[in-house]
Image 1 (cartoon, rainbow, N blue to C red):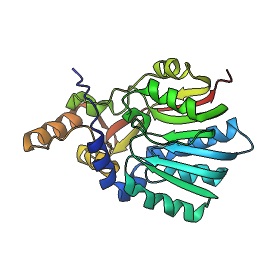
Image 2: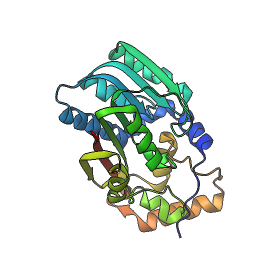
Image 3: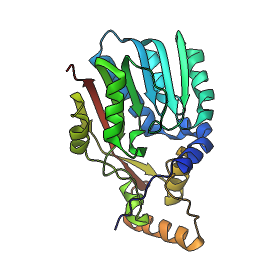
Image 4: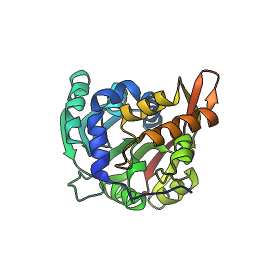
Length: 262
């Protein structure tokens, strides 16, 4: 039975901080998601010009780069749990400068001073780490101007199901329908879609290395004993083999929303 645990934000911060240097090279799925999300924003706002933008979970700057490559932004506010990520964002800003840049360190679910009158809020592969999505949608709506856009990507219920089936622990992913219900209280839904894809790896060991290099293992402070490791490798090979080794399922979800006018 799947054990759904309360997210330890400090552990999440530690794991993502440790992988800042390797995330961009290893997070191929998240990089594609960032590009797709930026395209959705441009489709919704063809002028691709924004006065005030907030990014939640800016991390190593994958989405910032994709967005600034396509859009003109005057003031860019970036929030992340990992304060050290500001150095990655500065590297992006060296290539795609904006008039004003502000970094807001900390948990978006805590009391942070956020800008108001935002034109756009974006978030790539982050909201699955939040405890209270209803409150997140309410807060983002409060800081967006009427008609402002909230565009985010996350993961659905089949995400990394292979890991979950062996380890019996995982994030509490919501279905697309559940996301639509929560977001629909505050926003008009313009786009909502999902897809599943299998990424192939040479071995179960390669899967574990991939997960460590992207920091997405920030769920438990549990060490890998020899017996646990052997069991994982054996079961993964037995259950999830494919022609080129083994596979891991990713389940990207995309939503583009507009704040209700009344």
